[in-house]
Amino acid sequence: MRGTLVLTWILIICLSQVAVQSQYYSKTRHYDRKPAKETNLHFFMHEHTGVTAVVVAQANITSNSSSVPFASLVAVNDPLRTGPEPDSKVIGNVQGIALLAGMNASSTQYIDFGFNTGKFNGSSLSVFSRGEPGLAVVGGRGRFMMARGVALFNPILINATNVIIEFNVTVVHY
Figure 1: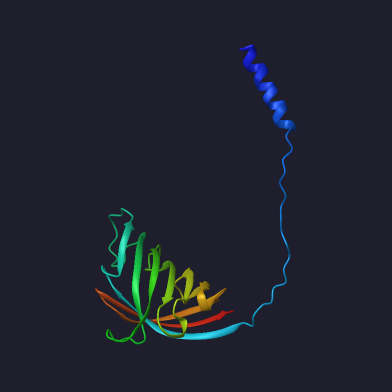
Figure 2: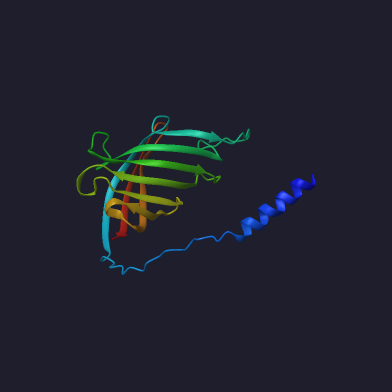
């Protein structure tokens, strides 16, 4: 027992004598900010309930008579199209989650508008916001680097199986 105690103290003394060689390295660089650009986008999200929007978690509430269940988490992967018609050109997709947390079917959403054609191919806009009256653009990638703005939406069609939402997005990016 005494030998273990002596060995422990010798180890502590030796470790305290070891010089730690670390240094924080940083070098200041000049940043040339590119001029901000403003882009206006117009597209339509086509959602098919149970196919492209699926409830992944739901609270166990027995007195819920709403068509949109309170306290539900929905995963979405919807196509973005150029028009409200089901056969209009696909320009990207929407992926994300929506938390239905209001008794009036309001939701908090994190979604990403990804574009896979045209000028914005490979770029995306990230949105994180409550759904009224518009969604806050909080970032992006590709051509929408450091994006900020607003995504205003207008429901075109809402029924038991389909939802079509028109988006008018104004985004400032670099």
